[in-house]
Amino acid sequence: MTSYTVPRRDMEFILDEVLDSSAHFKKIIGGEEVNMELVNQILDAGAAICEDVLVPLNEVGDQQGCKIGENGVETPAGFKEAYQQFVEGGWVGLTGEEEFGGQGLPPSLNVVMSEMVGAANWSFGMYPGLSGGAANALRAHATPEQKETYLTKLVSGEWTGNMCLTEPHCGSDLGLLRTKAVPTANGTYKLSGTKIFISGGEHDMTDNILSLVIARVEGAPAGTKGISLFVVPRFNIETGEPNGVTCGSLEHKMGIHGNATCLLNFDDAEGILIGEENKGLGYMFTMMNTARVGTALQGICHSEVSLQKSTAYARDRLQMRSLTPQKS
Image (cartoon, rainbow, N blue to C red; front, side):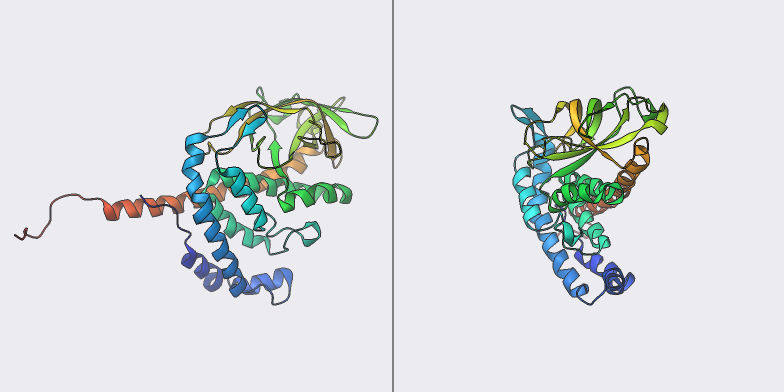
């Protein structure tokens, strides 16, 4: 059975002949620097890391999965090294702002790269993908100081991000959440509660992890109108000490065993308010909408892989007898 091969000819045809991406890129960022010649060089390099590094880890991730060790959640063999190679190659910050350490390329280019990564290894691609969603939420709603603190780390890939929404009793009704946030004298909040189904909630690939958490401040209105949004690092960004965020258990979702889907406990974890109190669900929708685009992209990724594998199977499968007489 064949492995995934990046459909470069198809991608180049769509980008150049169908979408006229050179004109699009010029309109988005100005100048002539980003043209199809440069784009093809970027995509060739992206295809190489996907095919040579990420594809071989797909089966490893599925077989080994993530596990809870002495120092927290451990990713499958090779994931940590692959992530460092991914970061060093500049892939996390491909379209991030230059002021935060990114390369400033058009965001649409990241969609193409995300398709490659997702088809090569969806479990792996969820880590930087969720970081991108967290970065989008912070871009839209954080203060300049918060952006400087957090976006610099997310854009560089030095830290990853995740999204903490539902709880064991909530289902899809987030108005029922019980995670509470208590204001402190220094302007931060202490968060306590449990969140479930947190993709990339904890892992061993980066020194810190930022959780975007929705919670209710004491005295806030009931239902979704009383939800606020907080950024909660796994480790205190000033002292490096644990911040009261721990993984209580791991989910084992079919097809993404290599991604750590966690139950996260928050025990007086220090959080920073994003935007205003009681407007957090609207802010979180920025990240949720990024995730929805990612879910649509997942369908494209799996369709491409399915096409490649089914085509190879159809070509190699033997059936019936030969229609021509056997020759002696």
